[in-house]
Length: 199
Image 1 (cartoon, one colour):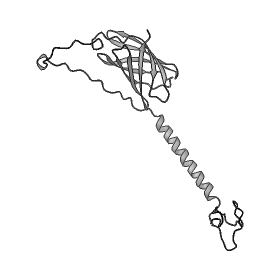
Image 2: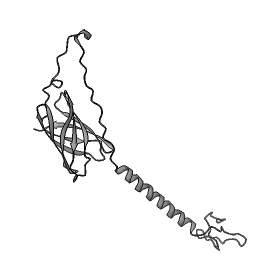
Image 3: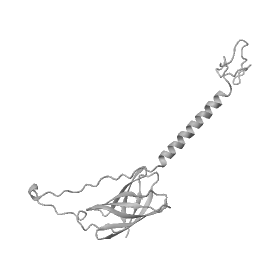
Image 4: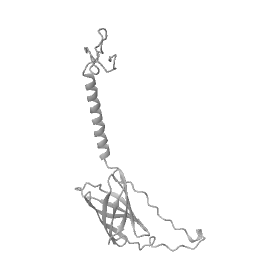
């Protein structure tokens, strides 16, 4: 039942409107809805919303599988299949591509940007190294998984004491301008960086 004057809801037994003060007519009856019904409905809604938030947080905290874009392996054509002269490979296509050195850059694509500092060594054409993420803080090791020309895939391993994801596959590509691109699936985020050589 509601007030005839202002439309405000009336409770059972009300003799006047609590909003505008209008006297409830003698023949006018109010609803028999129990007073506890609205607070109970609000409590149920709060419990359901809290449960949905907890389930969402649990699902979001699970790491997504590492997904790295495939690296295309160039296929050499036989001399009979090509009519043009064989091109001379560029420096980044030659076997002498050098990933070794100190690198740094800003990781983008995560909830918050952060820095990576990488130290890479190369022995017999195989790269390995360490990566430090100072703002997180995390520090892990890199081991080469595969390599074709100027593209290498490394697996980043993190000690169990770190908060970072372990066993992440990172694709590294050396560019003609001397920078190195970094791309990885880290949890729910696809992260990238352009690394510059610092040493």
